Image (cartoon, rainbow, N blue to C red; front, top):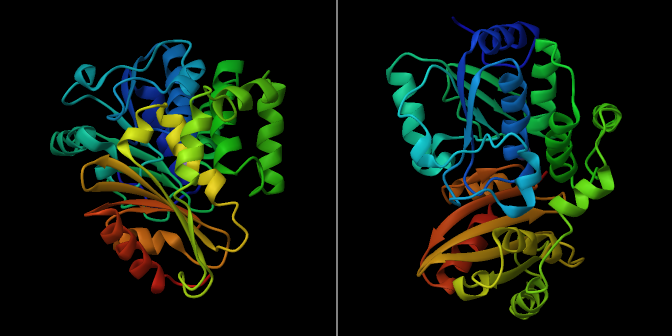
Length: 335
Ligand code: MN
């Protein structure tokens, strides 16, 4: 089946046909899945599970479902990497712009393509590489969850509360708590609330609930924050560093949440948080307010993402990593 690589009615009906016929489906989210990646996979996974399909949801890192996202999986659809078959009849990759973002599960894409099996990619990243056989990629979509909702509508799946909860988790986080929203975003959110989502309880569980260890960790990390007004083409850069020792005191959720505090700095267009994964290896979260395209900066360092929120991995000492990021930001396009 040949399908044009764009979002539209033809694609949606072809994608619905593919999913309607599926008896066994593996859904993959990117490494260190956020609520949009895992919520999208679990929403579509539950819909297919309720239709009688055998469903597995997985991601490569970490080796367990992040605690804040466990409430999204009442059917226990998440399985460890070791239980993802080498090749299956249908692979669906969600919120994942390139196979490399699947970590050790990237080989499942290669195997599926080699076997001639369908690989469906549902994503909203501008950096999407169209690595599947079927693509629902819409960079204008505020979350992958919105695209999954379109697919569920096309399939005629009624929204129950667990499905709606998964989609709402993706929507509320990828829009920055509805800061980046259109009227259509709120229409989608209204449908999810009508399906029974408790927005206060869900947001608390997914975003606002931290162990006390978060506070001393945050205190230490924020002590490393530096403001460099002349960087990022004179728009200002603020950065902070999370060492492996800092990260060891908390969950992944707390580490990933640091950038949301740092990015509120008024004097900086760009916020960067350097997270030590191994000696000399840093994953970097980049956020911009609205003047610089940080996805291009991240891509120049081998990463990717969105114009205002992206990430990459850099190697070297913290000073070398900082220099690499400063250099990438110096040529990032203006928005
Ligand atoms: Mn997303």
